Image 1 (cartoon, rainbow, N blue to C red):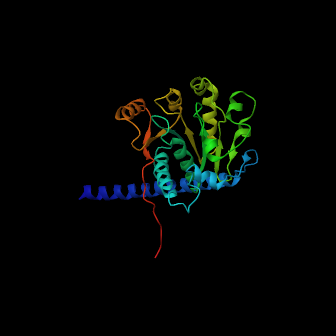
Image 2 (image 1 turned 45 degrees about the vertical axis):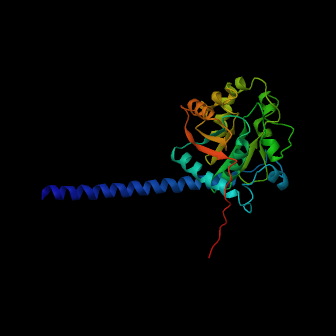
Image 3 (image 1 turned 180 degrees about the horizontal axis):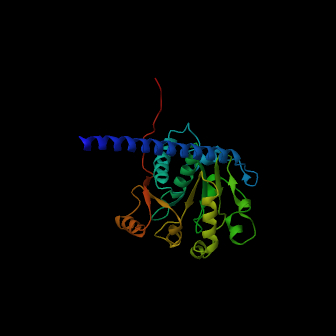
Length: 275
């Protein structure tokens, strides 16, 4: 009987501790949400260049996440939810988008995912075009800006001068206008390491997405991946050989792989309705 009494007393004590710990945890979450709310309200694109995107240009380039009337946008919202859940569970803030070989559609996925993340409350998204061999982010979005990361690399401009807000709330882009010679060496430089830390730590609400070159065509991605929290692999439907996929996964063996997106596959549009 004494053992039972002791157990009941211990259970009451543990319950009290758990309740206090639970209350403390909820209190911390409330403080964090309040901090993020204040942070989001403080973000003003006074230094960044604001550009207005052409809806038809976006549609022509399969950029659909910003248009909730497009039935295909749900695909990226679903992807966003899964990506954010895994990143938040692991306290990850930076994400690389790669593919095994060119033409898999990784840049299109990167742009749509970034836009969808920016539409999520309590989040901001920054998309960085680190495909220095064949940059496409600015082209697909229709951004025409004189200064880009090329000028930042050469030391001719400040970071704030190359950041673009494409008239989508909580979404910013760092474009690359021209291919960069010695791209692998550039991505392995101390300045890039410092840049990634700056972009990652600037805002708690920010998710930084890096569009990287195909991993089997150059060593650029392998150079940068150790500095990135996690990776999303984009495959073109029926486009890659089994060896290419296996080689890609082997090269990513030390990376945190969030998952694999099969792009260019037929997806049945979803219609949402309420009764």
